Length: 86
Image 1 (cartoon, rainbow, N blue to C red):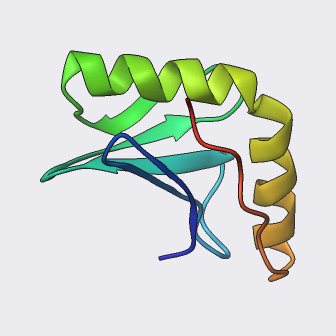
Image 2 (image 1 turned 90 degrees about the horizontal axis):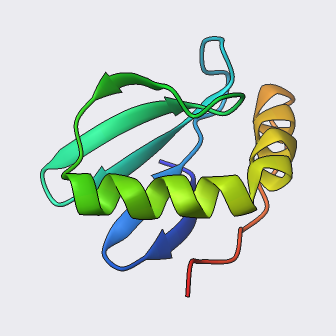
Image 3 (image 1 turned 90 degrees about the vertical axis):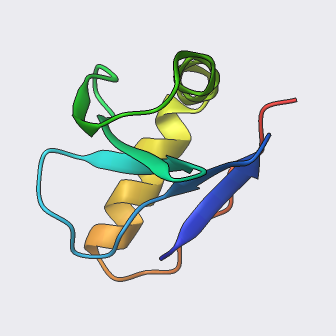
C-alpha cells in the first residue's frame, strides 16, 4: 500500500492504477474509508467521527497534493509524501 501520509494513528494511501473517480484511502485502527478527492465524499467504509474529521481537515489543506499524487499513481510514478496534520 503506497502510504503518502501518517498522523495521529491515521494512515493515508493512494493505490497505483486504482479505479476512478480520483480518491484516497484512510485507515484508522480496524476501520477504513475511501474518500473522493474532488468533494471529499465518502465513497465507501467508515471511520469514527473524530478520525474522519481529522482526515477531512487534512484533505482540505492538501487537495492539490492529493490531485498530484493521484496523477502520479495513474502514471505509475513514485508518489510524493504529504505533510501530516499537526
